[in-house]
Length: 261
Image (cartoon, rainbow, N blue to C red; front, top):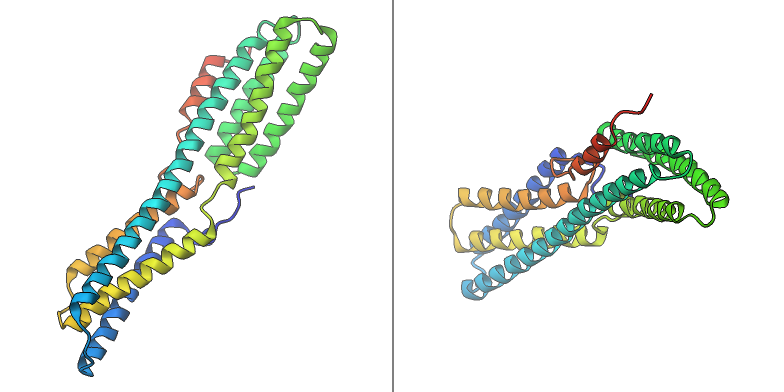
């Protein structure tokens, strides 16, 4: 169900190593090229080159900030839609208790619904959890249809159907926000290209000026790699350490209590 991104073939730990290697190779390649041109005594003024290095690094910082902001906004969107869904499920559950009939059966289905959604996140079997969730939605909606036909003028039934409809809509919104809204491949490609070229230019400037390799370059490479890794982590809802807390759904599950005997 999750749309695969261009970097999803690599786990996050391997992606970090890959990014770090690319960055270091870019710096080293630029450094060797600059050193080669210096050995050939090819004249190239350092002042304009230093300005260009600063400009390219500034552009890289801008793209990193833009991409990080995009990933963070989608993370916040996933967190908000989860809270909205938990509130909608809780409201539907409460209104089910006021139905003229079959309220407890519907409440049982809603308890099962919350359990399925939490288990899908814990186990990682998201596709199966979505299928089971949609099956339960269909069962609850069938119950609502029967109640609506039998109690066409009931305000309580109308309010219940309204909250149930909102719950189903938020399921679709959560799918969109959590599984289908990913950073486009073109942005990833642009980010890697600008990062490689910017850091290669920095290495080129160091090689041309005749300075030795500095450990500070390793620190710069690790810093850029960590930032790109954080962006990738935010872009993968089911992986990494930056995951949306399921506490809102857990609170709803606890408020529902155990099934009545």
